[in-house]
Length: 198
Image 1 (cartoon, rainbow, N blue to C red):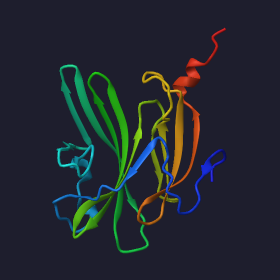
Image 2 (image 1 turned 120 degrees about the vertical axis):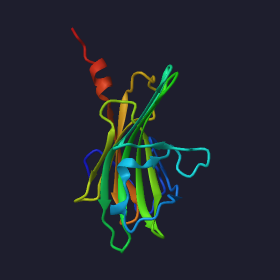
Image 3 (image 1 turned 90 degrees about the vertical axis):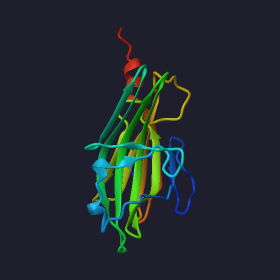
Image 4 (image 1 turned 180 degrees about the vertical axis):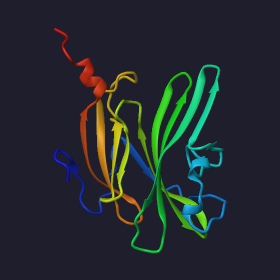
């Protein structure tokens, strides 16, 4: 375990304050023989998978962009990784950067875990976190199964000026990511602002 992290015991249901973990169980209608044949770079992705009112956005070569008067929405597929499983099931992780701006901006990271159910790609887990700060992102190590997510902390700092970042460790257990440890640090912006120029 990393030094300075607070740990969670086995079987705990605690979820990190700055990450939302859900099990959408959203199934795509397309049928594929394996997830290797599923085109993640040209996928329709959803802000809230499974919500009937969410029509999603269609990625083209891993990107989506729509600009209008005083608003824009941009989505980027940042990572696609196969996940190990002790069973015959296939699992794939994708990481999305989602920026939706109008009067203000909502900047999120989404990690989604896919498997196949009856040859249909299905989102079985989603981890959503705040990316409205420099240095945020999701970092998966396929050798260790560790997923480290750096998120803007859920504190009382102004929208413009994030004060803290949360670093959260999840471990892949062969079927899902399980929260293991977290720590809070000063954000890069906060450290820059606190430098005394004298």
